[in-house]
Length: 251
Image 1: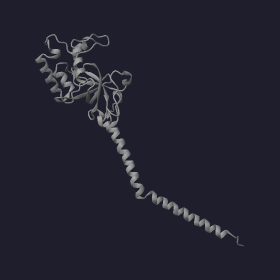
Image 2 (image 1 turned 30 degrees about the vertical axis):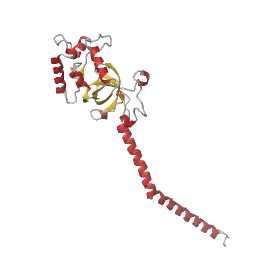
Image 3 (image 1 turned 45 degrees about the vertical axis):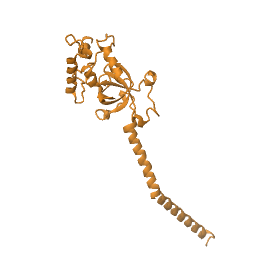
Image 4 (image 1 turned 180 degrees about the vertical axis):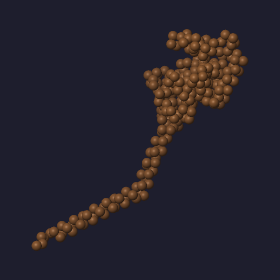
């Protein structure tokens, strides 16, 4: 016995299934079409390139503790010296990308006097290869010539733009680095300039000494300053106490 309407319902169902199948195939075809694949590929590639550039060139290193191990001896950092507390180290505010990275017109370095804004935001740089006269700290008296050496370094680098190449970390967590600065006579190695002007000696401790392959140059410049009797050698070297000797005397 035939039931009216069954054949019609079956046909309608088959038609619906065919339409759904055709719609799915059409959607899949559109999804894999060049009009979709090419813009999606460009968007994904742009994002990946942008992320890579940010990580490599524009990511700011906030302090010495945040310094990636991969940076040591391989990546130099550009920034501004915000304070000089001792004659052989300073605090450095990393400004990746420089002017092209927006610094000075989109982003600004906090002023040196605003310590609250700078707390935890600077890299403590220990100049490689040199020892300068010790300032008064930890209950120890200031070493002779420490004030003059500090004044020289402040006038040379404070609030100036410098580039540092991290070499290692010292026992105090500071970043031992080679630091350079542009002056009227070209790019200058700050450690070498301290030696050239007689305000430091070659780093005396064998442990943790870093010269970035220039130890002979460091020693040559110290000998020249001693011979010329400039800086901390201006009164001769007969009774001179070096920073290394001073540290041992005041342990």
